[in-house]
Length: 513
Image (cartoon, rainbow, N blue to C red; front, side):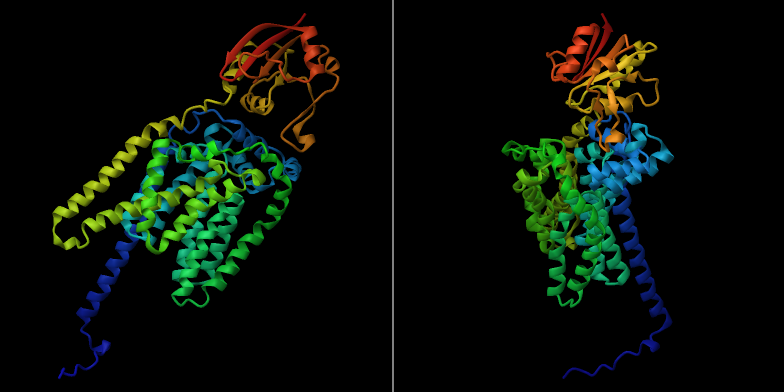
């Protein structure tokens, strides 16, 4: 017979024992806070070290020129613009309008908000991995994310994709916390994070598919209100973004140029991650990670795989299958890779107390895998900071014009690569030649494009010297594709006296005959 043991009266516990327990709790809390700061700060610092150097070195490209143009308009003109195009970027343009008023519009300053958002995203990946799996998993996932070449590429871009990644991560982290410790504040913050995700980029809201799995798991564990709270919070976020979404559906034709083919799907790993080596490695290990992610495998699979599949299947209707639109899926892939590697070391050493030999071997394997990944990815990280090979050298064109400009010169454009807007940016702080053919400005049109005069001879009257900026294909006449009436007047009344060929752009001096 087992001897009776009377219940312990907590009040009778010696003060020294109670103090010991309190000290242990405090030590555990301090250790927990320390690990959280570690997985937040170290990946953030590594990402910042990749993204911030050379932030203003690469030339802006046409999408970034659109950001500058829209964000420097007056509020009235911005309202006219989004009434016709790009309404889904309204919050980003409005925020950048305020930022430019404070920080200026140099390439580095235009890109700095996105760079900081990408650095924060790396830390959020670490926190998410720590909460889902373990400290070492979160730390590894955050560091792997930080050195993905595409993270540097789009961290150095004045577009909202870094913010979409950050808010998708923040929403997922807030959902996990709300499910663990439900509160009105927690669920409200989650709903606002969903709104932030939608305001950054609508495609990123597909992360909600994985969130549904977490809510289903919570209900299965006996949480009777999780699905109600989730529905209310999700509706809060969706209702905030609904007016923008509703208007944006009428502007979907602006991306109809994006025609997707099977080759785009084949090239997807390389274009998403910034290099084929990085993308292929991460995706291959990520598939193994699905076997190691346990109850989070469905969340991460839905997050990583579902958005590309849905956008590819609907590409002919919605035209949304673009790697930069899907940048927010990269965290899910790095979390899967980290889960696979840390599970591998756990299987090698299921009981850490058996000895240090297996522990050392596990650490060496993880370190070697991470080092090999960094070595493979690093050249592409450097390439991500270079000028885009397919983009015109507008900076060089601007320097050519400034070096040879004379008083009274005019400027004309030809091509379909936003030449007028790009040159407006590159010559924004200089004395630019007059845009002699522009009759209606983009602001008057409520668009990005100007309307050229339909009587070019009249508009060119009194101008004896022109700078032609053309982006027609190399080897063709710089006026190829120009409005026939305008091309005829230019060909009849002017002759080319100087031609400068730069990367995908030609600058010609045209003098009146």
